[in-house]
Image 1: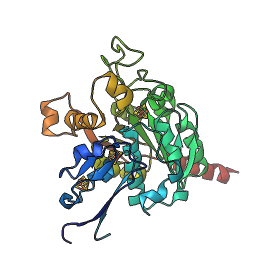
Image 2: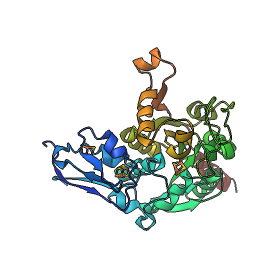
Image 3: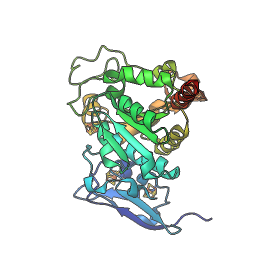
Length: 69
Length: 267
Ligand code: SF4
Ligand code: SF4
Ligand code: SF4
């Protein structure tokens, strides 16, 4: 089992409330808030698939899909 | 089953404020249930009143949204009649320890197999930020504009003293630990208490100038430490997190069943 590889970072825009928790704690600074205060993956290529954003998002808006899933 | 399958998606986005820690508790709790591969029909979630209590509306289990402070009493009734079901009772700090304080200590004393999750945000959020029994001395709330002179309960000590056979504490910052602890709490046969420090940025955070949701979570990282750590010995002000008590004790419904057997034989 190698390192997990990101397939897609799904963020449900209609559920995201722009709290910034995912942005603040992402160890690789992958995420940002857009001009409507919705989170998006600005640098998906840097994602290490730690899933911390998915686990902490209080709005259950994030799903980190890896290649092996 | 993916955690989305445990949600009542039709009620999303949920009603909690941006950054409210209660959402992270919901998130971690569902992962615990997913890891245990519990069937939806085998889980009953009972809640009382408050922002925290709204959690039962969002999950696709058997759910009861009951009255303030009495969730454990309703849950006790359900468990007594259907001991095979998994009872989970998420409560706010006020709901659990002020309005429901008596139900709480007696459920713990009986060691009935229920998982009580105390979502401690140190405030009454839904009614506008009044101080709760967990707010703590010197803190600000709408009803303590010159600082609070009430001292807070220590939920963990209270639960241990009342006889709970599983007692743990974690925070929304430690989401992985929260999932792990809730999982063990559900598996534990007896009364389990999990205190989760969870941020209310709207009232507690704003009143006490603790910053936004992310800053409040950073704070949980800084003010807590694993049980018995070196940091804990050096700085007793740090709040310990982890599992404090996990012991086997006769469980209430099993004991009651024995009584039934005895009584039936006696006829
Ligand atoms: S943590 Fe969730 S709700 Fe908050 S900004 Fe990120 S995606 Fe949005
Ligand atoms: S999975 Fe980890 S690295 Fe990837 S976006 Fe989320 S927090 Fe950042
Ligand atoms: S008032 Fe506080 S506890 Fe209630 S939803 Fe808002 S942030 Fe959460």
